[in-house]
Image 1 (cartoon, rainbow, N blue to C red):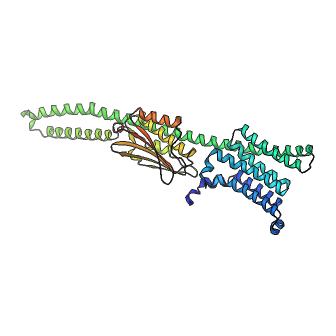
Image 2: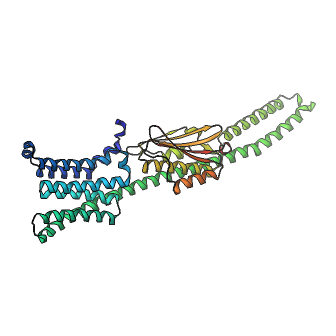
Image 3: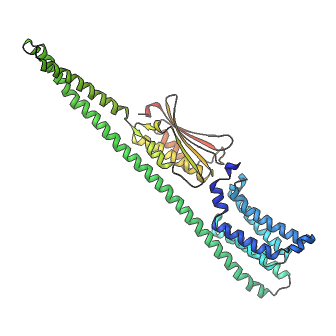
Length: 386
């Protein structure tokens, strides 16, 4: 499990906003919990301290990747709401006014995982619980409300700061994805241009130079059969050079024809870009060659969609792009160690992948990997290979 504690996990655990939460929690806990009361075995203080520790643990748990349920949106929301309830419980037991400030941490998390309306509703309910507690202690309701308003203002500030930071990070990821897609498309266009140029050159050499050299050989052979010229050494040398030149041209045409089709290697390499906390490996790059640009684009989009699903939905830390030939079929696989499980809810992405492959007689299959993760296989028939 040591490998599971990836760089991405460390980035989440020790992000600037996470450090702010840790410092806030430590400052409030040390001021609200009396070390002397703990040493005396005061049950109330121990209960309050336990509630605060539980709140911190639930804050750290989603980023630690220790439980699969922590990746489900509903479970994530439940964990955050439970943090808020533990803050209210600690406030009730310890009776320290500063404990309620920990709802700022709860607010920051809620607004990054829920729509603003839903997050605001949960936050209002938690603050009403805080209001009821302060009122039950005999405090004047007007003073309670006046004290609660700035507290809610701090919560709103923290929530919006976290929301905008999360949106900025998401936009950065989207721009990186778009840049990788553009680079892959650029490589595909460059390879298409090279393929067209190779095809044009091979045809020109075969149809023009090859045919004229063949005609030249025929004329030289005719002269060589004429007794008047047969004994001339220059004619024999010319005939030999014509034979060698025609053989060389045929060899060049054959070499060019060996590289017919579209090489997907560079385009796939552009997609398999380095990402923080994720290792993406490309295997079998030399086999990534198909006959047409349309087939190359279909496989490229399958690879792109497979990578996106593995990263965003599967939370994978290692992904392998593998190209191989199996029983004459070209197979492109996207294998990950994420948390995806079968059966999958098939959305537009998977349907689009199937449709692209079906247009060329290909197929898409998905299987689970051991110990975890999914493998997406895209296959094209042998006729699609160059």
